Length: 293
Image 1: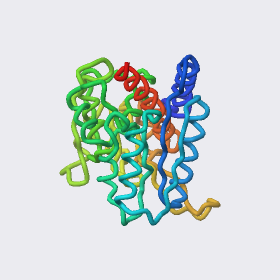
Image 2: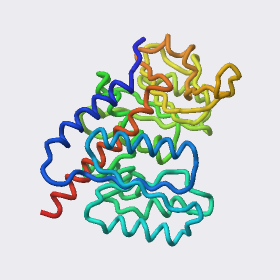
Image 3: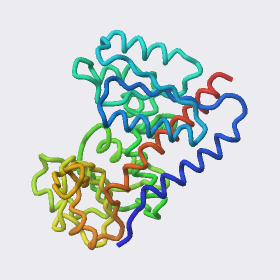
Image 4: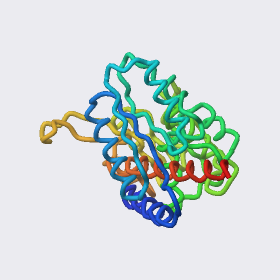
């Protein structure tokens, strides 16, 4: 069994981006990070993104509207960022306060600045295998983890456990693409799938993104499989100072010995998300620069 270390792989991507950005003449790529409210997790995530951007040499704008901001005012803010030629990427940190329509806000972001990859046009570009689109950061990170760990998906059976627009569906579409690093046969399973273990045991590569703590157990995994655990769940644990421990969607202690390779939680897919956000921002910068020449 080999651990796929997301921290190491993310650090290598960030180092590559830092080298590429340092070679740019003129202005640097810019990402606007919009956080509404004081959700502790959102504060932490935005700080991490701001720090990583600074480490790479990107410009970041932190925009903190009041928690009471109206839907129309937040839409106007997005429109202004869309129109700003100095902004290459826009990220609106979720979750938003309940009075705001998150889907509408995400769709308001111009597709060419949608570095989070949530706009329907960018999801459609994945299906069309159009490389100008932006892939949501977690599934993009999964594909990088596999490629940089020497896992070639060509001809393999990939089973994706989860059907969200953020992870499951785009991950399946990426694995299906007719290109190097993909070319897999893909099955999507979910909470309503009958006889789920029979399907997951067929996986050469199992991507667990169902959002249930330690849901995938040893009886659901084929010996020698590669397992990518996307889940991040808090489980009560009185022995921890925080009162909880972080675990994935996979029961790691029983599944790991069966696998060829597996991602840990934390330290697997998680670190890749910010790295891929920065990669998307640099890509947006280059694509927008070419479009304005």
